[in-house]
Amino acid sequence: MTTLTVKAPNISCGHCVHTIQDEVGELAGVKSVQAKEDSKVVTVTFEAPATTAQIEALMAEIGYPAEPA
Image 1: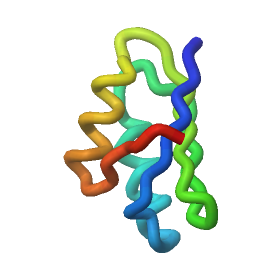
Image 2: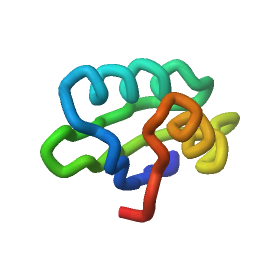
Image 3: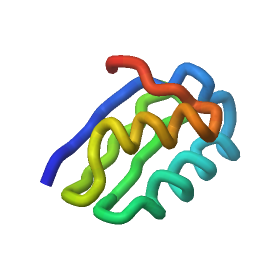
């Protein structure tokens, strides 16, 4: 199991948190997604076939590009 922690500066409300958790959570291999509005930090726990690159690409695609935490 791998854990990815990134910042998503575009998080501004609860809807943003919900969108990230729903969209990233649907990727095959993703076990949990926790996005926090106050810290703008997203933590994803995953295993294959999901990859860090795939998760970061999806976050960018839905409007929440990831930055190093």
